[in-house]
Length: 89
Figure 1 (tube, one colour):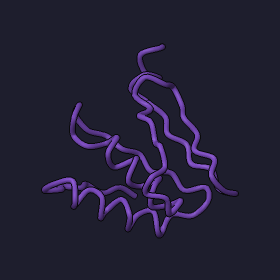
Figure 2: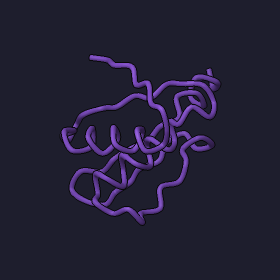
Figure 3: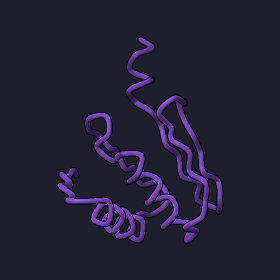
Figure 4: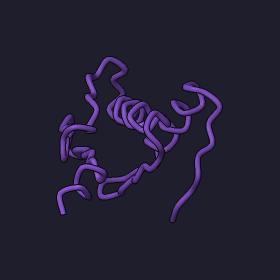
């Protein structure tokens, strides 16, 4: 299933990320796509912080990494930069 998020500001993005994090289960995948500067990293940070209920959690951008795993519980979260992966081929 897919959806399109049209957010007005950072508050909207954060609210959607919090809501989505509350319904995701182990094994679920969330794929983000958008132009540079569209809020993907902000969304990912908000999602991970909400999921682990830790607003101070350091969540680095996966932009320059191929994959980044946040292992804070029995259900680790993984962020992958498909843009970087697609340029390897």
